[in-house]
Amino acid sequence: MDNTPITGQCLCGAVRFHISGEFESFFVCHCSRCRKDSGSAHSANLFSPTAKIIWVSGEANIKTFGNPPGN
Image (tube, rainbow, N blue to C red; front, side):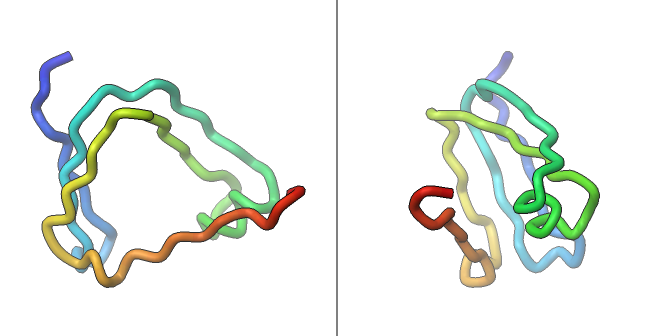
C-alpha cells in the first residue's frame, strides 16, 4: 500500500480530514451501542494503531464518546 493519504468528509462537508497509515482491521457491528451511534442498522469500524488524522476543517465539530467502565 502506498502512503497516499485517504481523504474524507461528513455528508454536509463541514468536517474534512486526511488519514495516513496502515489499517489493521475492519468490522461491521450490529450491537445496540453501534446502532445508536450510527443511526443505522450497523456501524462500520476501521481500526489502526498507527494511522494519523489531519483535520482539514471542522475539527471543532468533532465529538468523542467513551464507554462507561464495565460496559
